[in-house]
Length: 197
Image 1: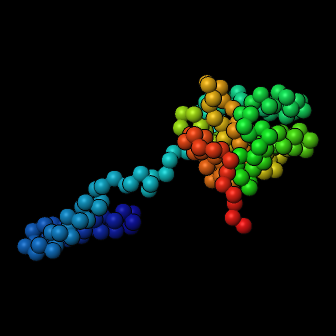
Image 2: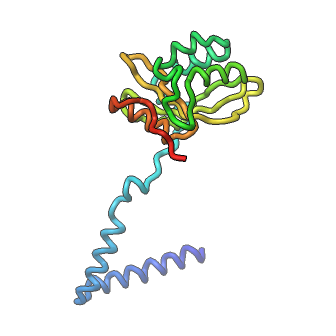
Image 3: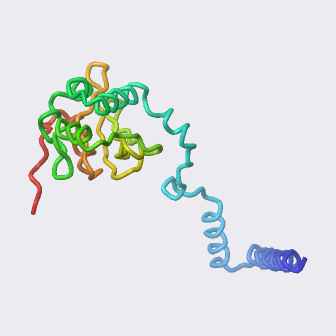
């Protein structure tokens, strides 16, 4: 009860002071009051408002079905040790060539590692970055087959080529994977710039 009374008392005193400022002839008081009202009544900038958290299951439904299917087919091929089937899910330009940069590798090597070391990829909910309607970056957990434990993470670039979703590259550095997506969209050479040492 004390808190409610002290809050009511504080509010009453603040209103009396605001009323005094309104009636005051002092232009500076009116200017300060106008600034206070403008600041308090304006909506926060979009950057100040965090995006709503989505339910994990719902977030996965936002990933285009074609992308989910491509990853599901790749994972099935990796679990079966079928490199030829896995290659069908990958853009040929990224199969034998590392297009990402220092944090990536040729996708044939990635599939070989996953098959021989016993791991596969699983989409991390809420990780989708839409570069355009033809290029998405998704973060994937690297999941160990024998115990289902997440042992690493990687960003994967999915691109739409003639209506089919393919994986163009993957790497551990998000910026490098996004840069590959931008090169793809701009139609510039896909090979990454040499890294500085």
